[in-house]
Image (tube, rainbow, N blue to C red):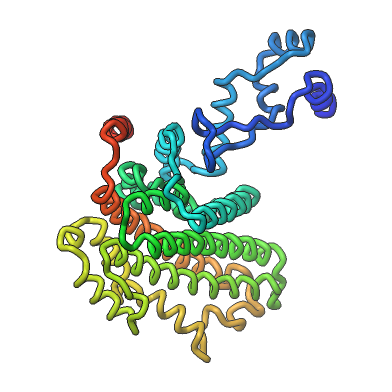
Length: 388
């Protein structure tokens, strides 16, 4: 059956909608994830006898199982990713979370505005990645740090992690509500910093996406001379490094706020911030494995390479790899584009790992202040046991 005839039959004869909206949970709630499943692939998956009967009766509805299968494929391909992204596990966790009844009654008007804004921002970011799904962009944290990814399971009771494929994506409305419900004395700055870090995470991912788009273009169109795509790519490098540094600084402040260590953003230098943070955190926190990861990443030695990039870009001499003479009269494979990308991508992965660890610390504190329901805890323990 030809494409035009099939489309006409589906639209005019069977009067089908172009898409079926499939939500991740059984109950549609504000902010719940959904995907659009096109009618045509559903129709084409049906056996010939079903199609013939449907055309005769002019009645056809896709089966719930078929819809579920197609929707799961779309969720995996465009949101969660595969095993290397911990996508299979996070899809299971997200389905569990979406089948809970959410209560967001503790949100302030400003919280609601922030949650709505970052949800819209995230949708646009996902759309960008779905249209140009470059295979070198996923962080592959499921392969690199699976134990850290597993923290998403106990965290879901307070800070639900949706995906870690290209950036750490949270259910922000639920997370903000958890902070407010707990009565945390630093609730206002915690919500503000979590929102800002979430936006920066996506800005980093977007900058890397744009960088890859530009170097793809440069690879296909470069003829020796410097071209605009290369100039724009260098600009994205500068943007990414700045955002990575800002994200790290805000994560440090967030970790402090969790346990009442305030005014870290007023410290003159990074060393002073770290000293005040270590002195202020309770001893049990300093003994957690995820604090050890945070400490290792935010140490001056670990940040030296990123700081060198940032200092070099702002210094009058600059970094050689970011200067035009590295790109003029060079073949694409002679330029440092891929080398620079590898460094920035690795830094983004480390940054995302540290953010997950910081969110684990936040979850622990919120659970202390506002223990979850025992029934919910038992259900989550059962889910965690089934995913090991």
